[in-house]
Amino acid sequence: MAIFIKTINRVLGAEASGVNLSSVLSEHEVAAILEAFDRHHVLLFRDQKMDAEGHERFAGLFGILEEVRTAPSDGARTKHVMYVANPVSYTHLTLPTILLV
Image (cartoon, rainbow, N blue to C red; front, side, top):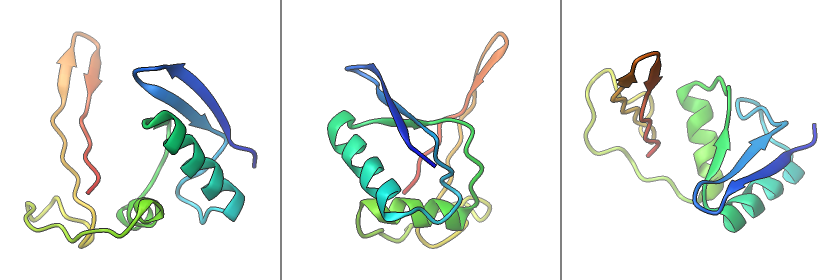
């Protein structure tokens, strides 16, 4: 599958599509993602379905992961991934904030 990188704007970065982050990525896919991250600093991946192990595997592409030091019992899914959500509602919109550590 080919990865497509579309610049959104200089502030936000770019949107990456054509990749399933829950699968094991090829060397070509990893290189394309790292190059896009280096160039744009922020990447948006829409509609990804990932479990905690998938998040951990993906985050590990960017460097050594640190262990989560404190987390609510239902927040830490692995020793390296913690989900933090704070939904903000605007009429029909809900925007969760997700932090991957």
